[in-house]
Image 1 (cartoon, rainbow, N blue to C red):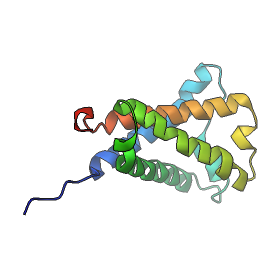
Image 2 (image 1 turned 90 degrees about the vertical axis):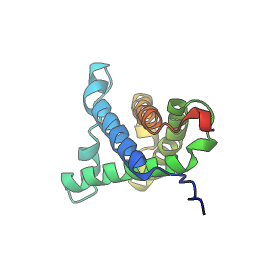
Image 3 (image 1 turned 30 degrees about the vertical axis):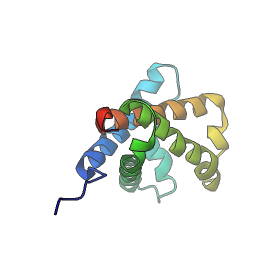
Length: 143
């Protein structure tokens, strides 16, 4: 009996999720200010809601990034375009969910309360998606 085709490459997805999250964190903390955009220190922002535990905040950020990568790995074959573009398309969903649902639940203004904050968040999520798609590149020829 032939082995069933594995739809998700777990290790590759976890690795891609970790690196994509790292790219987003680095972009928010160091690259954005050099472009004239306010720094987004995700750990500090989230720690406020976790008894000021920076460790727990960072663990949660990377956990979410990896879970999202596993979801991406499961659905990426249904998205159009080359792998990096599929990742960018996928990243629009968590960006919108965070802006429209999570921000409100946390008592924060939708879309960060301003156009620059919304754009910065969008760029960071697009960076996450581009890195995720580029690393979790299931050969376009197999699609």
